[in-house]
Figure: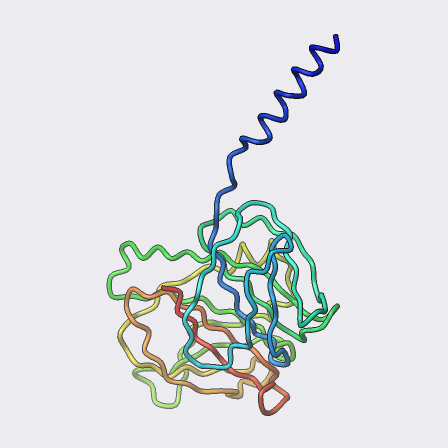
Length: 235
């Protein structure tokens, strides 16, 4: 009987030793928390990198390799852990967004799937709106109407603050939409509460490119904390 038990134990140890390593996934991190000097992201206690606040209008995604599947993530500022959460990153590419105040109990975060397939896109680009401004309940993104002077033409209507929703909801509603490429347009962030224009920009969305339009910061503050947009190219 003892001989049989020893054989079974050896077999189990052998299987454990020869276990196939897990597959990998790609993650890009967007630090949209304006009061942070840098937020370190860890997966299973292994540091992925430290990410500074995205304070430029044009930005390029940088994807790092992480373990796929159901994993534990932590956020740290210096030696202080400010968040710990679980996520199953089953897709090929994801973006992790960090926003609001970079302190324990205040910082918010979520993953979005990054569908970078541009098959059949032709002369179009792909856009996704990401609203991360805590004191702006909802907004429109509009451009100048090509034929009617003084009239705005909506690109996105009534975009809610993403901090209101849980991870599962955001994964289901935050896909990309096609948009004409290779044309310089004016982008206006419009407050829903009174239809006033908060910010205005010009940009040329290149055909075949995939973008996230990230609205961040605080509408009611000035300086580094103020409302701004960053356009992040994913490819």
